[in-house]
Length: 259
Length: 319
Image (cartoon, rainbow over all chains, first blue to last red; front, side, top):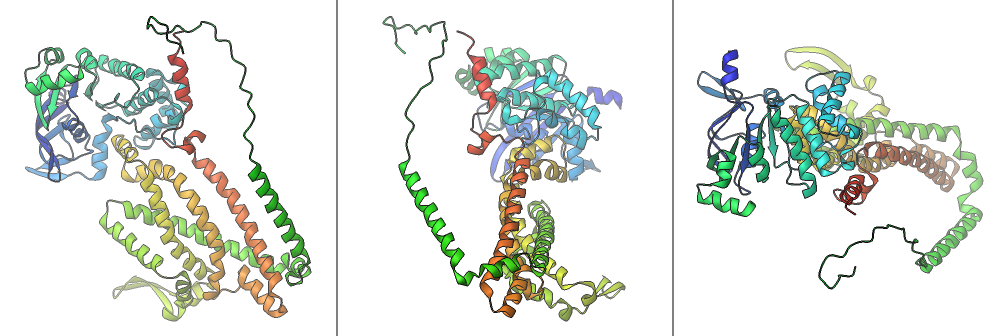
């Protein structure tokens, strides 16, 4: 059992499909992310990369194929070859282990930075306020915002807000972190501070899937780069390899625009 | 400012000596002054005139404004307002949350409730509540045809006062539900997703994340409803409850054949309570504006929070 859990990939997608009504967003996605690996997802807007990320966290339900996180089927329970939808409580439990960072930060505006970070540890995990506060402060320190603990999100710059959002996700001690275009809503001069925090996370072995347009970051930090277009994986491989020597026409066309 | 002829960017001077502040002649607003003067003059004239007008009968006003019967009736009105609004707010939040819940049973129940209670006049509803004992002489609790746990004799169990509270509260709940719902809908969907992603359940998300933010939107119209309720209580005569402020002052004037001063007395008390409620609302609004700066009030996303000022100053150490 313990042996199995260390060898199963963190995320395994097998022929995943997702559509909204008649609009097919993910056609046939098969991907594997191993423990401690950083995968960057790139591609034009509407290619389905954000949707795929949201499926991993069960913010969307896949229509076909199998999606496993840490060996567990996302959103379903399998029993005697039959799939059963999870109860909301079980789905919430699954999400706890997966941290997510959004393009628009989505901090809770009525709570201070520290309160944002300790909200879920206290009310979901049942930690004591003192314990959660101590850890929350350490996390804010880790993202370089120890002095902003008592600030409300409206008083923080975009980069600072996104760093608080990362600390908030880390407070749940996730096994996997999902980043949905974490720097796309930031002013150019604030992008670096967020990427620095993410770089730090990667260096301590956090498993990460990052939807991004930051090719420099992808090349430097990612273990694998996936180029998606129109709901399929067009090209996948070593970041430097894919960026410097793209094989597919669509990859070449996309990279020539963003590089 | 001046591009030098070589086309190179101009070099700014090193010194940053502050310029003297601008001293301009302030824009004048003569019309505002004129209109204010005219309005004040008109109000003064009105007051002077009113103080002499016999119909107002100020001596009777003075006699009744602190009359025990009146102040007791004022207290009843206040109690009716507070109790029925408490009922309405609790039930309204429940109905709004049910209406937005993923559960179709809750949704339907809430929709039907609002349909009926908002769709019929409150006066008619109050008459019905007054007739409760006639329609249902006793209320039984149990499983029909199987077991009867206990019987409540209606008249003995519900005083007319509490029937009035129930009548006002249940009607108001339908309106409160819509106010709360609009507040809940005003909260960005990203908040919901962020809470979900942290493993928070739907009810925890509602309680800790969505409702507190919705309060900012909910409070102003709720204040409106409370003030409106204060005056709607004058309809409890339909139940009939005759101890409220308006009914009592009318009863007194029907004895004295002098209605005008008593209308003024009642108005004074209503206005007094309304003023207190406005103060309460002010503090509630302040409390729930937490995290929303004074800047945010102007234009939500925009504004210029401190952070922007900070980054501006951080961004210009080059010179």
